Length: 279
Image (cartoon, one colour):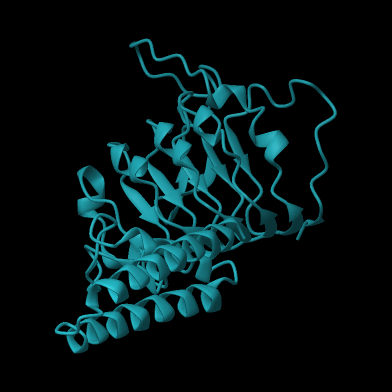
């Protein structure tokens, strides 16, 4: 039942040997304790030399701990010295994931589920090459799932459900083994294993439509809709008028006039589109 904020560390090398960072199932709030997380050097530079497995403790006594691994609560009667995990789930932390979270290359498990985290999932998470489980469910993450996550060949458990993620689900490697409950609760996600198919890829969508979609998220939907409607109506009217005057002796004069008008309209349209995109 701990509550309140987690203050910033006072020491330059706080918890440099810490391998299990677990504050789960409390009432902690405030921003995610990023400054602590990014000082966990034992999770960055793990000794990968092959040899006999070692456990925390000594010949007469071994440490044990209860951890949540791959969605299951498990008691480790012996803790391998190479075991590392971060679990801050079921609190009220806010803020975004640090962009350089990929520096924790020895991390085995990461659980930030059931918080109020926002922003994008950083592409640097694809650098967590030792990661075996990742749970970011029940937050407010937005944007696309980074394609880099599909490169995590050790990832056996993934839960990104109940967020605000959009776009196609990455394919390949471990991502082809996850079930739809790993992505449920994101209405704008599409692709395998969900039933919702991705009808258009980024290559198939014209650039104008992509800009329109981006500006819909930043309050520019009305301006783009008006521009596109005007452009479409102008095109139809121009074609119709061309058929009507095709046989007229004034056709050449009218053609020149329409070309000048069209050039002016295109310049104006581009200026307005550029301003709307910048907003």
